[in-house]
Image 1: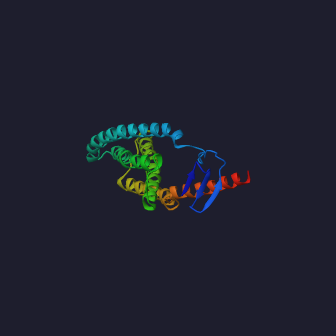
Image 2: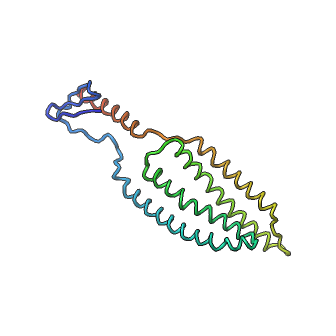
Image 3: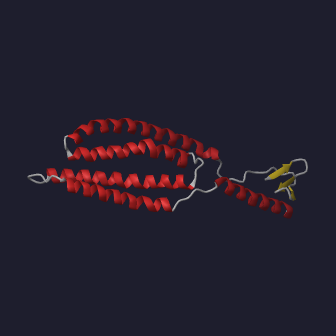
Length: 204
């Protein structure tokens, strides 16, 4: 994109424009070097990996244990099993995608970026709604004498509503995001800064 000749003190932009540099050393055009963010990136990566590993082990045990309760017809066990499956999906799929796309800003495409944001927008409200459903089921069973137990129709309707809420939160996030060519924008910014620096040295 540009070549700098220290002996001639000139910078060439797009192999066509030459500007005198007065033997000045070129400075970095980026005000925030990548090295500044490296410690925080490594720290975030380690923390997310630890959370993912602990969550995978813990939720796998919960899925194994509460599968037996669901077979026995215990409603609270079904809700906890669904919550554990949702959290297991977060630990196995969402967190690794977040590490690659958000923390390390890896290469991606539009549909991968949209799918990633859609997953994040879906699992968070679904987890919150399932927790609320567990609390409601406990409230109806404990705070009323005799306890009010949720029927199969209520459970199916509640899960359908939760699924719809998750979709309503996830679809807008997936539609309003896209992948950008980061290196292309950096190259264009470097071109502009190089040209601006060359013009300023000509005036001096």
